[in-house]
Image (cartoon, rainbow, N blue to C red; front, side):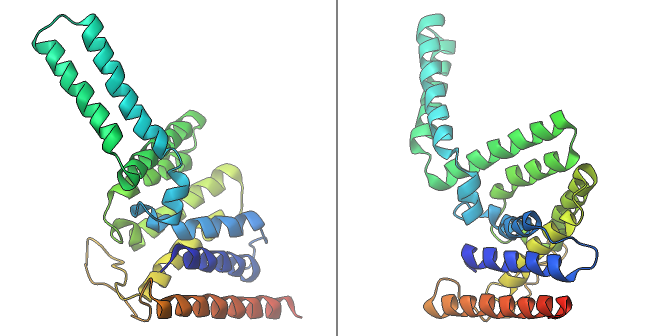
Length: 246
């Protein structure tokens, strides 16, 4: 399913949580969090909507590798005497330079997400927020997993919900774990409607649960995604209005 459809379903799920779950205050921030969480499982795909947004540093990563190569070359030429050690440093300089020049969208974005995640881990350690460090770990590792593998499991959903729970304890933002977990789970349920399905219980079981209605990227699949989003939105709207007593 397309990222825009996942985002719409995640936001609608946030509205459902805000309007239907007893004791949870209506929160625009919570709804936005549900939308963000609905995109998180696709961090395992370098071309996903969220990967592109979080991987904004990818050009800096490429230039950093190229700059490291140049600096190593200068250091080798000016500081090391001719010989085996200098030649080794020249090879390292060439390797870094080639990596920087040859690194394209997907690989650069993965490294950018790795650095973004690691920076978030450090921020969590500095502020003593465990949830922030766990979030950074997720962001750093997810791009290096196969698409629709680990991030598309019930275990990853539980971890994401737990991160929300810890954030709730730290920040006092009531219901944040429900917004986070609900948005994340909405992605998996939506992908269950595609032909590839979702392997919820990897690595315990590789069985793909699916109701193969949608062929992602096809004209019919796109129309069906729009229909599902509209239908889901109308259902939630009706339930919320009914609960409010109008």
